[in-house]
Length: 253
Length: 253
DNA sequence: CTTGACCTTTACGCAGCGTAAACGTTTATG
DNA sequence: CATAAACGTTTACGCTGCGTAAAGGTCAAG
Image (cartoon, rainbow over all chains, first blue to last red; front, side, top):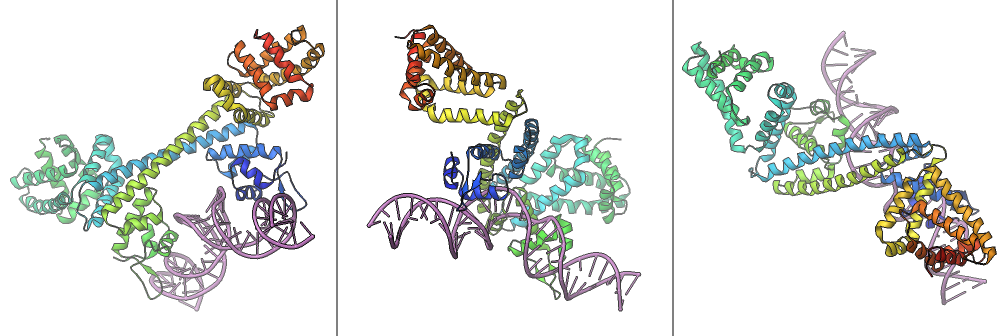
């Protein structure tokens, strides 16, 4: 049995363009070309096309199909396994993306004032990203994944008012830090007010409060020069003073 | 703060080509162009790029991103939901594909001699396909879906030895048919040997044997000119003779 | 003044075809 | 038997989202 390009196309459900393309890339060449230049396909080509379409269904690239069909069976199996791994990766990525889209939708649906929202979103996202990038590993090690994820979720779900309030409190802390530092005593009233405010600030993003976690964070402040730089920039020796105040506030040491 | 294209690229982790492309398609145009023709980006552009990359992470097309970023928030939510649906479809497709790849691997792993295997595979697949296409409906009507599916499964799982044996037996049947036909008697010893061999042949692909099914198939042979053509090609009147022999063998009539 | 780092535009390439356009061949019909 | 319709051919641009030259202008440093 011999088939012209249209017949084969109809039989197999592909377009003639596809067949010509497969010819062009050498994936499926006709059995012969007749005197008018027509492509003539035979049974062998029909069979090969079946295989091509089979692999194509599996999302294998035409290049890989070409390679596969020219190799013995065990190589085909290996190729399929390889391909399966790729598919797994792809699906894992898809899953992650979908989870993110879900989160974003949920987050957008909760009312957040439209106006100026774009910037706000950007800020929050950037904040979480930066947090995650800089301290993610350390914090995760120390407090576990759930704590961190919950923290991020809380941040993402935060209303704009809260966000503004949080930033305001952050600025306030710096002011109080200055005053408290002037007393020179981490157990002074001002210093304890400082620690209390810091706790409040923390609770904007932390899912729950515990003295241990608070104290742990305070220790981290000192171990991490990025933190010390931040506080010391405003008040020389501020980071250490803040830590001491928190440790006392938390009842540790 | 103003950024040249390279600065922005480094900040955001994309290439300058990407930024130029985004400019080209109008997704992210620079704040201004300086006297030397350089692209200069400002804070607004940085923010917008953040958003672009965010959506890009979610696998949204650049065209859609352009549209989304020019619309108010509730439209963005709708767009995201729409996008989510697309992702779901994509994942469902992926799952199906993966299941198929798995099946194919499992199927290939069951020992099938490497050599000449491609043809073998092709044959089996084609056989089932053809069977299904030609007789699927009729057989399904007559014996139910389970019988047919089981038959196909048995065929697909068949070892090459069995397949070869089956073909050999098929050829043998034609020979015996000739001899038996010469006796002129469907109840003759040779004719009953013929029917017995046909039963054996049948059992290669049928999940279980029953006299009724066998007799039914024999009747179908006569009703279907494709069958009669096949047997008559080798022995004139062979199809009818085979049917009669089977009917007697099966104890019908 | 030159070197090198940085900027520009233009344009081809990738996968897998869809979709003309412009033209030759075969088959059906008036 | 002429002509139209159906079928065949090649060539080539288009789609996405950039990567990767190529060919050239601009700017700060040595």
